[in-house]
Image (cartoon, rainbow, N blue to C red):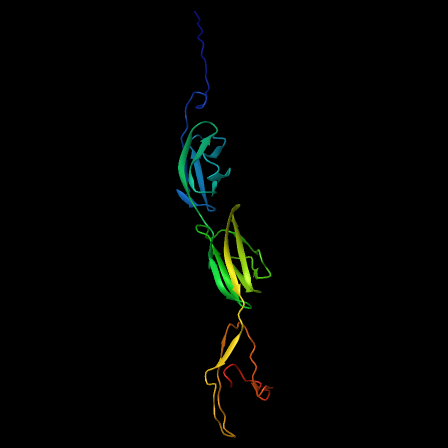
Length: 239
């Protein structure tokens, strides 16, 4: 007697049977400054994992790209999640610290017409990253500004008040701050530290002039109202 039996072969995948695979997030920082970045990576124990999806629970606090790069946008806390297409996920909490563009000096008073000065902008937590700077003056006829780096040059053109604005952009996040500059115009004053001098023919004497309210001035000397032309090297010390 010959008898036959039936056998069945069943193929299944872990996902279809409801098995959840382990996803692990590694790397990255737990906190960054607004405008700063950090990058997370993720691994899955599923050999056939077809992809990881990244998500930030609050995209107004921090954004995250498909490759796990996070950009801090504003102060707050968000949850960064990585999810395997075949099931399973992991998450990390990220804190974004408030950032602010600071200017040094933050205010300038009693600046002298004709003078100049340097102003510097700085941001926290963005070392090694590309930052673009745009400087402007709302009154260029009073104070002009030149430069496209963290340091710009101010030129005091005329009396008045001007607002200098700096806009710094890093990783698509924009920061700005202002500096108020007041330029004053004062009459120049020149005096001698030895205004009276008795002398003899053939004897040389030294005079020293002291200036006030003069920036970048050019010196000239006169004797009895006549230009002192015989000594081309004569300087403000009267030599």
